[in-house]
Image (tube, rainbow, N blue to C red; front, side, top):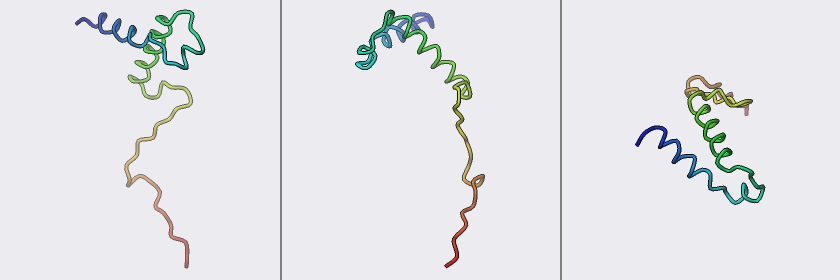
Length: 71
């Protein structure tokens, strides 16, 4: 299977609208699927690509130490 065929399969499987998408309607489900998958691929490749989204990756030793309140 070529990459182009694989991409086409992804688009065709995504072009079947979810119930909420069907309720809202779509003039071109194929184009909508292509756009959604293209944006998804960009976000997967660059996790900082999503606007207003920050995913912090810290280990437990990089977090703030909790202070116990006095008795």
